[in-house]
Length: 188
Image (cartoon, rainbow, N blue to C red; front, side, top):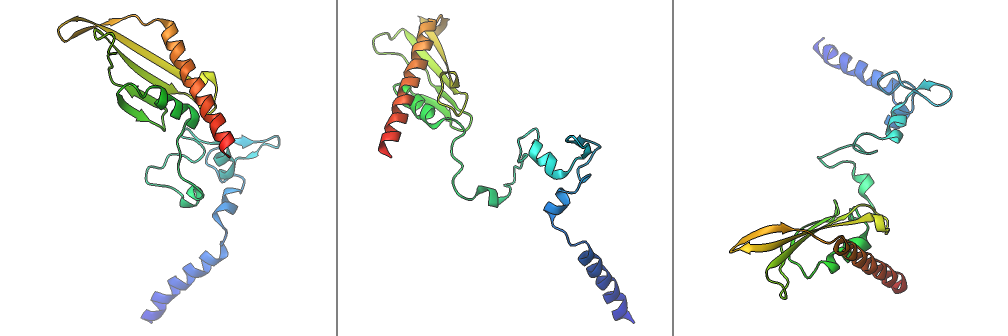
């Protein structure tokens, strides 16, 4: 009798599980599978989970997952950088005369440390470069130049930076990026 008490519930569970044997993608495509009462399309059918995935979320179409994620999505290559690689390399090349404080290839931010040119030791500069997109365009790069002049022993005061300095730095980065792109095209 005790064997029946153990095996009967197990057999019932197995049979019930076999009755509803559908895949997750089938369930995701079933109208009304998404929470809420949102309607989709011209027919006004209930939204599916698949519709929600196509629509995306606050953190992008794959959502936010800090524990890893679906490994099948990551097959076929490395993570790469999140900005235009030619602009990134050109920015590093152009700013290489200054000491580098930090560089974030995923966010597209390069920050230099203070640099005093040998010809003018009483002034120093700091540059922050922002790569704003993945396209090689002039609006995908922004440079901020900071300038200080010495006012005493180990004392510095902020000074005005000519707008032409910022423009010249951005133009220099863009010129180098275009050169790198041409070089990579001819190398293939």
